[in-house]
Structures are given as structure tokens and as C-alpha cells.
Length: 177
Ligand code: FES
Image (cartoon, rainbow, N blue to C red; front, side):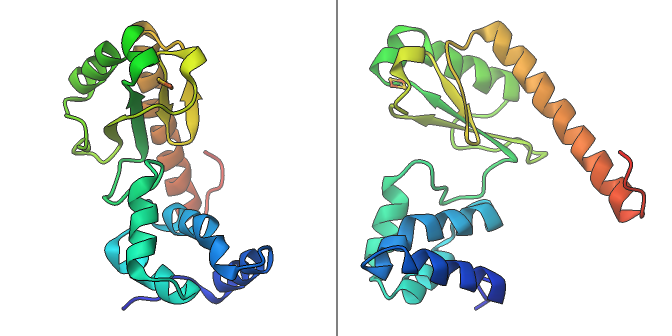
């Protein structure tokens, strides 16, 4: 089994464990570390976290599956979550979801072929006052309109292009984007 964390990351796990009376309480931040590193949390990594924190595998699996913020499948670089719970539904959340599916050419729980976007329908994300709302990775967009979605997708595509140009330049020894 591949190592879950580097030595440096394991030090961070120890630091997190030391913050709580029960070291197992560090589960959520440790799962965040896994997701930030790998982009999603595989069953193999759930098992590794369970061993690391000396918790039952079923418990860690249950926590990962409970929170929609944790991904149990690979997601796109920009993971778009659309709330269709009551407040958002009454203010057009389902239309927002349909529109995004149409614009991206994918259904909820799918990724675009270029891996740039993935889409997910979710329950209330606690921003009902800004309904309808969507989240892109960890950023919330409230009172979202279809026109704003067009602009947002365009901005995200441009940002991805700029970042990959920058990464290419950096790997060629040229740090100027
Ligand atoms: S109903 Fe959509 S954020 Fe609460």
C-alpha cells in the first residue's frame, strides 16, 4: 500500500492529534489533509486513516460518506455543487442544476472529459439566505443567475489555462507566466 502521508505530513497529524483530549477527534482535519493532497478520498486511504488514528474502518467510512464536502470519487479540478434543497429549489436551484449540466455536457456525479469540471447536486449548504447558491470547490456563489454562471465558467476556464501556462513556464525554468 502506498504511503498515505510524508514524514512532514505525519508531523502535522501528530500536531492535530495533540489539540484534542482524544487523538481520534483529529479525524476531520486529517481527512481534509487527505482530500487536499489527493483531490478525493479512496477506500484505501480511508483504511489508512483508520489505522493511523486507531479508529474502526466503518467509523471513518461513515464519516466520509456523511459529509458531502468529502469526495469518494475523483472530481474535476473545479467541483461544482448545486443546492436544490427547499430554499434554493423555490428560487430556481433545479433550473441552475439543469443549466450547468447542459453547459458542461455532463450529468450530476460526472466529470467533463478534460477533468476540469465535475457536478454534484447537494442538500442544504447552510447559505439559504443567498438562495439559489452553488459552491465551486470551497467558494460559495449566492443569488446565482444563469448569466453569472456563463461568466463564472469562462473565468474558471481562463484561470485553469493561465495556471497550466504558469506551470509549464516554471517547469521550463521560466517563472514568468
Ligand atoms: S436550501 Fe440551499 S443553501 Fe440551504
